[in-house]
Amino acid sequence: MPPGMGAGCTDPRGRLYSRLGARRGAAGRLRILLAEILNNTSEHAFAPEAGPAIEGRVTLTIRMEDGHLALRITDTGATMPGGCAPGRPAPMDLTGPDLPEGGFGWGLIHDLSCDIAYARAGPLNILTLCMPL
Amino acid sequence: MPQKGGPVDLHCEDQGDTRLIRVAAPRIDAVIAIRFKDAMRLAMGDGPERIVLDLAEVEFIDSSGLGAIVAAMKLLGPDRRMDLAGLTPIVDKVFRLTRMDTVFSIYPDIGTALASGAA
Image 1 (cartoon, each protein chain N blue to C red):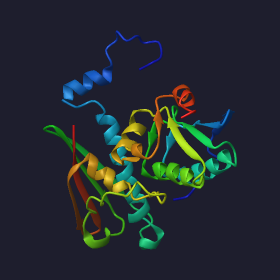
Image 2: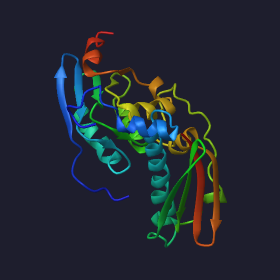
Image 3: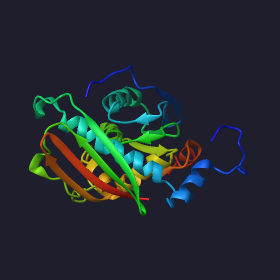
């Protein structure tokens, strides 16, 4: 909202949200989700040690479905280790002095989405998932 | 990932036994995480026992940025501590989802954080 707009103005994002049937914060959740997924793609699928495919193509498709967004991310990088998407990580021990400094990414992805599926089709990694609106 | 760009902009100010460190950046993400930790190491130095990290200008954080804040906090060792202030909505969401909100004392703003400093 531009500075100076009073509280009496209708927030365009709020209007859009109610038209889409989205809960507050949906845009923020989508940003976190995409940041984690696309970071993983750039850091792992195209990692120098993952093979020769340090360059390639990443596509992102977001489709609005009933009550959720259907996301499809493809890339031409290295196959996901183990051939499937990582499950939800075990809860971390946050009580001791040796706190984890990483490993939060897939936890966030599982927190924010559902129906996560991975497939390898020829040269493509295909990750599909849903984010509730 | 290549580390591009200059140093991360941190502004320090000491108030009594507290060093306020204001992050003058809109994002703490994978692109700047390593530089952020290095900048924090310098900014925290061997200053006061308590650090308050002011995140009011930070609009977005990812898991790498979160890891960098935890790493910076661990650099302090057992005799110093880091509190957080001014979490914007997405930053707050990431702290709550990862349960890191249970690790740090989190204040709505630096004023509240400083007022609670005697605790």
